[in-house]
Length: 383
Image (cartoon, rainbow, N blue to C red):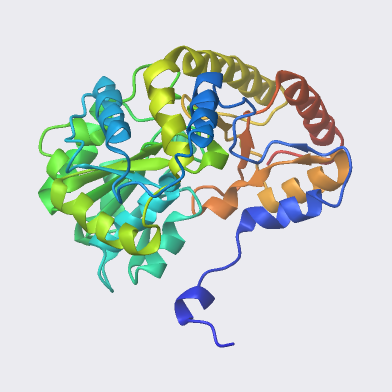
């Protein structure tokens, strides 16, 4: 069967190749998957179970259950975001659907979307599927992978139509301060860029409170924010996210959503209502554990000679291996049975780095880092 040119233009996921190898091996420790090792908080699970026992399994409103939209609107006020639950909040099937809906809602064929790199692997394909053109904007470890206006100007992003943001960042764990975001916001206002801001890791920041670019002057009306429950609430399999934005943007996204998804999973929505109402303490405990692992992992990489900047968000470290990152990852997997992701699969700026998820137990982290240290000492020279 003939496949579309847009699909043909997208290469297979660079992450999957390593995990297909890992699936055929025993005793592999995986530091590659961005999934919390914690269970969904019990109160949220109980709400899901209760909803099933009560037969609440019908479709909800396209936009999502009103009680959930109201709780989301309340939840994001902690980041100085204020959205009308009736017109400016959309519940989606994971934050990934929110990204796809937003891109398709604002990108016409030929439009240019500036994508800071390294970046989450779905952004560029999503732009391609919408008929847009992705413009890579390299960020570098010398700047702690912060997006700068100099980097935007260097690639001609002033002529772009849209800017995609992801801070705290996947894959680097980088964050941006309010002052740094303000400079980018000024660039976007001056050159009339729409901003799509993936803030799925907003609740996992370790040095300071998260700042959303949508909260800055003149940015709310030109920004769509994405978030969800997978990372902070350990609800990856329940597939629930949300989008926040001006009413016309959210209405456009819902127009696509109502034809493709109709509504997000009902059981997951009941769980999410309770998660937002009563699970802040559970989320804080998970964040505390991630922070402990973060400091341990970063210090171990630096001790073994793999320079690792201080990632301050999400649950990823991004050490520099100083050479062919794909070769490093494949050899490490075969020789020491530790799976991680080469940085080059995340685009320009990721070359020579490794994405290491510390969303796993401390015991496995200690063993994995011992194996990595042995591999570096015996087989790898950092350039």
